[in-house]
Length: 470
Image 1: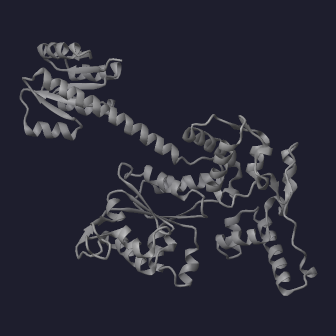
Image 2 (image 1 turned 120 degrees about the horizontal axis):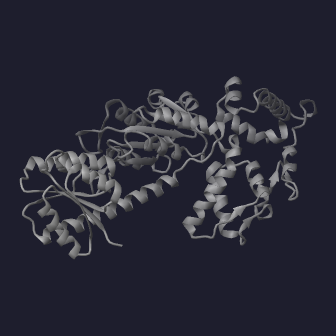
Image 3 (image 1 turned 90 degrees about the vertical axis):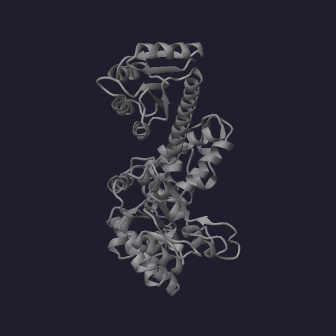
C-alpha cells in the first residue's frame, strides 16, 4: 500500500515540485493551500506524513502545527521554509515537528526527510501497540462490590502525588493496583519502577534503591544508578515494604522527607521527584509494636491506605477472571482457545484460593495447556478444586456443593484438654461474630479488635468457611 504524504504550502509551485518528487517515488500525494485546508485534509485523508510550510498567510505553519497535533498527535510533521530562523526551528520542534527543511531543497533532501518521518511513524505505532499490550497485561478484572471500592479509591488517589499504601495478602494483585494508579496519574508518561524489597539480599538493597559509586565497596566495579533516581519524575513501587531492615527504613524515610538521595560512596545529594506507592502483606502496626518497623516511616507511607481484598471476598469476579486469564494464556502460548463449562466455573468460583489471583492464574495456565479438548470440564480440574469442604462436588449438579462445609469443631464441653477447649471456644466465637456481620471480614476484624491478617489465619486454622458455617 502506498504511503500518503500531505503537503501544506500556499505556493502552488512548491506543491507541484513536491508532487513530482513524491509521485516519482510512488508516494500518494495530497496537497493543501492553507492551514485550515490542511487540517481538514488530515481529518479526511489520514496521511502517513505531513510536510508543512512555516510561513503562510492567515494561519501560520506554527499555528497549523498546533492544530494538527490536536487532530492527530501521531502523524509525523516536517516543516519547510525559505525564511527559517533558529527561533522558528526551536518552536516547531517544541510543537512536535521532527525535521526542518530550508528552501530551496533538493529531491534527495526531501526523500531523506520522508523516509525518516515514515520510520518514525512506524516506531510510534509499534510503541503504541506495545504500550496497549502491556496495559492489557495489567488489567484489573471484575465488578464485585469489594473490587469497585478499591477502584473508587484508586480513582481518587491517582490524580494526586500522595503516597499510597496497598495492603493485602500475597497474590491479590497489589502490583496491578499500583500500575493502575500510575497509569491514571499525571506521571503516566514517566517511568514506573518496581522494587521487591523481600527479593533483594539485605547487603544489596541500599545499593539497589540509592545507587553506588564505582569502588565504593568490594565488587562495585561500575557506578550504579539507584531505583529512586531511575524513577525521577515517575513512580516507584516498593513491594513487600515490611521486609526492609531498620537501616534501609531510615534511608527511605529521608528520601520521603527531603526528596533527595545519596549514593553509597558519594557525599553529594541528588534531588529526586518521585511518587511512592508501597505495598505489604504484613501487619505493620503489629511490626511497630515489636520494634520491627519504624512508626514515623509507617505514617509517611500510610497517607492513603487501600486494602486490596483477597479472591475469596470477591468470588463473583472469578468467572470473568477465568475467561480473561484463559484468553491471555491462549495468546501467550499460541494455544487454541478453550471455554470452561458451567460446572467447572462453579467449582473454580467456590474454591478457596489461598494464593489468590496468582494461584488462579497458574491453575488456568495449567488447564489451558494440559486439557486436550476444546472445553474444560469439572472432571478436568484437580481433585482439590472439585472438593468443597471435604466433599467432592458431584458432576451432575454444581449447586449441591453449596451446603457442604467444614465439620464444626467439637463443642467446648466435649474437649478433653485445655487447648481443645480454647480452640473450640475461639472457633465458636469467630463463627458467631462473622454471622453477625454477614461474613464481612474487615468489619468483623475491626469489631473484635484484631488485625485482618490475624483473622484470616484463624479462619484457615479452624477451617471456618461461609459455605459450611454460614
